[in-house]
Length: 55
Image (tube, rainbow, N blue to C red):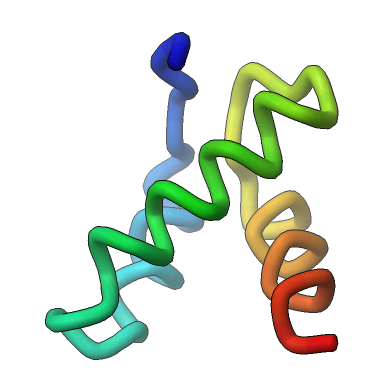
C-alpha cells in the first residue's frame, strides 16, 4: 500500500481511539483513502471513513 500522509489534526483524532485498536483503525482509514484516491488524510477524510465503518 502506498503511504498516505496524515495531517496533524487527523493524527490527533486517531489518538482518540483506544491504543489497542489504533493500528487496525489506521490501516482501515488508510485503505479507505487509497480506495478513494486520496493522498492525504484530513479530519474530513477521517470522519468519512469512520462513518463508513460504523454503518
